[in-house]
Image 1: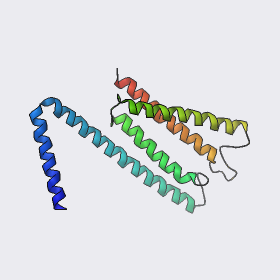
Image 2: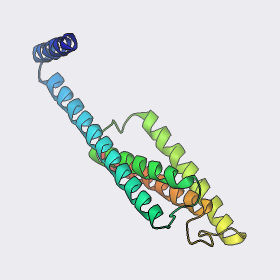
Image 3: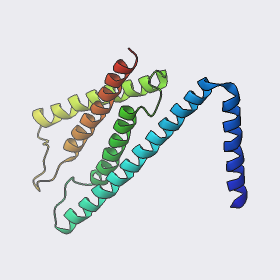
Image 4: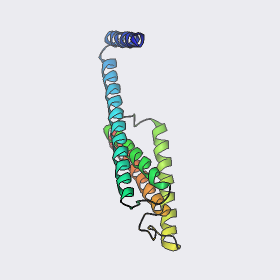
Length: 168
């Protein structure tokens, strides 16, 4: 355990010496990287907290014989909601480089997939016998996919709005 601590201290000392010799440009770049890492850390912490709260709420509701979402989609919704919060917080706080084309392609794919799922689920809900709610008053799988598509569109829209404002 101690050897890893010493190696970590030595590597941090080396990074500080290296950046001080190179000038202020590297120091500001290093500071922005530290801010991005801190924003990612906070986003992941908030996602884990949301996941814990939703899991406790779901457990409490199940003990009261109330099922929010039918089937396996209940736990999947908890994961999707937590990841949505993580991505939204990372986008808003600037936890990654918005000018990177990889993030743009990923956000575009999420947006297009979410729009396609939204149109599909709306057509299933309105033009077939499937409904948003089941007879037991819990959300059906179609309702789950509709909610997830809205969350995906929210993430994509937040990315492109932030990117447009950032790259001006």
